[in-house]
Amino acid sequence: MTTRPTIPGPDPDTKPPSFKAPAGAADCHFHVFGPEADYPYAEPRRYTPPQVLESDYRKMAGILGLERGVVVQASPYGADNARVVEAIRVLGPGYVGVGVVDADASEERLDELNRLGVRGARINSASGGRSGIERMGELAARIKGFGWHMQFHIHAEQLAELKPEIRKLPVDAVFDHMGLFPADMPLAHPDFQMLLRLLESGSAWVKLSGAERISRLGLPYRDAIPVARALIDAAPERVVWGTDWPHTNVKPAIPNDGDLMDLLAEFAPDERVRRKILVENPCALYGFGEP
Image (cartoon, rainbow, N blue to C red; front, side, top):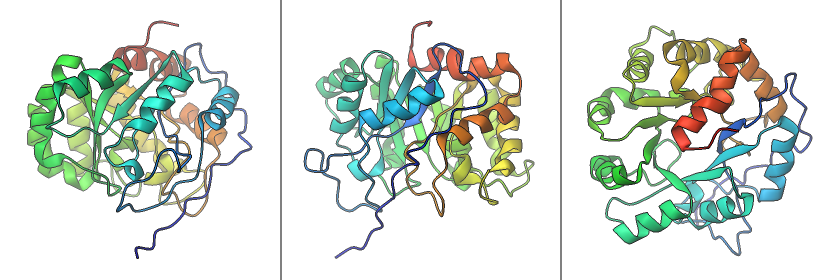
């Protein structure tokens, strides 16, 4: 029998952030889990997530002033996108999703997911999910007609091997969690420079999420600030932000989402740039209408 950790839930006492989010602000990366009886987890899996429902998310997002969002398929659900689709339905207008889709999925299934609010396909090799890396070119050709992007949850050191194929994709590439570039590595490192060049090429995006994942100093994750600022400087029109709520696979302490939003103010001290990150860029990437 496989032993897997059960992840604790998010901090329930969300702190109000130090700045007021602009109208239409979007959380471009979060997950919803459970109830397990209705949405069983895949086998094998690396961890068992906490039960966190749409009502729990709304409470947190309301405190932060977030009005739109992107619910992302997490590895415990494998390629069963039912929970993502249900979250989009329950959360309602202003919410879309990113799923995990096989390259041989039928046209009818892709069309159905598109109608239900899915806007991207996730390639996940960093957390033990169904990666799909071997057939990402085939999948990209299938999703192009729907206007989807391909979202990559990969470790920074994988970029050197994958960059040639990523550059050939007929759809935009979106990198989770600042490319998972370790904050204790120099910004001149080739892995990070490759990520910057992809951003500057105009066909890639990066999520300024997961500061707690790349930090090597722990709370309050200030060592992630130079990484985020370098990404913003490279392409301020192609970066978005997300909470990564409820913070699965984070050790040892679960961050408070109010603190993470305050960290965004450190990433982007200029209010106009923050508005691009929270409102304008998500509108461009996910098709949200203007607030």
